[in-house]
Amino acid sequence: MKHKKEITVAILAIVALFLLYFGFNFLKGINIFNKTTSYVVQYEKMNGLVEQSPVYVRGYKVGQVDKIIYDFTRADAFTVHFSINDDIRLPKGTEVSLVPDGLISGEALELQIPTEDVSEWYVSGDTLPTSITPGMLNAVAEAVLSQLSPILSNLDSVVNVLQESLSKKQLQQILDNVDGTMANVNAITLKADKMMERQLPQLIDTIQLAMNEIHAIADNLSQADLKATIAKVDDAVVEVKNIVAAANSPDGTLGKLLYDQSLYTDIDHTVTSADSLLIDLKANPKKYVHFSLFGGNSKDKSKDKK
Image (tube, rainbow, N blue to C red; front, top):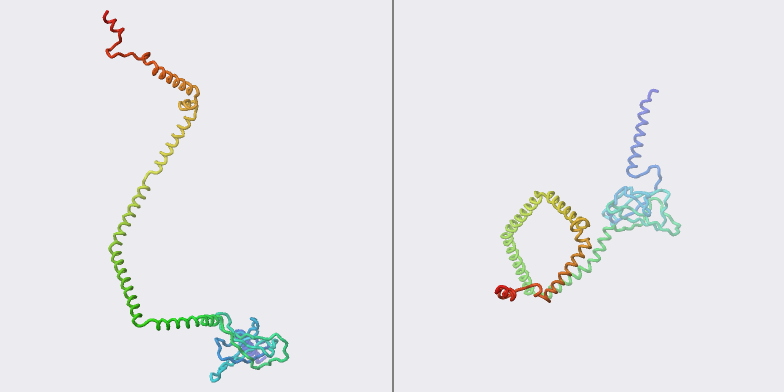
């Protein structure tokens, strides 16, 4: 064919244009294969609504904003054209609310479709009634302001009463007292600073000396022969165990003293005999002891005369 190349290039160009158009609309969120129905709404303000913003029914996306036209000479300055799926019919009484699309995602349109039986329907191009739903932050701000309003009114009343109650002279006295108090506080602070300047270095030196002593003690403990000391203690414990074992053994000297019954009997007899001897000694001392003031008794003197 003579013009085969030109026809191929033309076909490729048409396909490229179609893909470009399809891709551009796809990126915009428009499916060119689905039929849609367009409607119009008007708002006084947008609150961040832009083209391609979603249109929801009970949180489900059914369309998007196609175009926004503004005319600031009118009260309802913004005219919004949006389209929804062709299988959704909007009955009379449907309201289009401007709602926040999340906390930071901007605004969206929400279709408030009535559930009662209706006999009339909107057609493509009709203008629907609208409303504006404040966002969460706006609702919180309004609630806070509504709570603060009476508080601010009461505060203003209190300030007015104070101004009426306090004369200029009394107010000046209060300010003078405050100035005097602040002067005393400054003087005390200055004295404290001077005291810290004098005593803080000494305190730091004392702490440093104490830390040096602690380090010296720690060094002495680390250098001490703890193993040898523990070994000596172990030897002493072993010796004590040996002594206790010897005392518990009936064959040793301590064991015989502790466990030999005959030794106890002999000692008891000895103590009994000694006690009897002491009793007899107290009763008859002359029987055991002979003494004389002149160095002897009368029998010895008669023997000497002979």
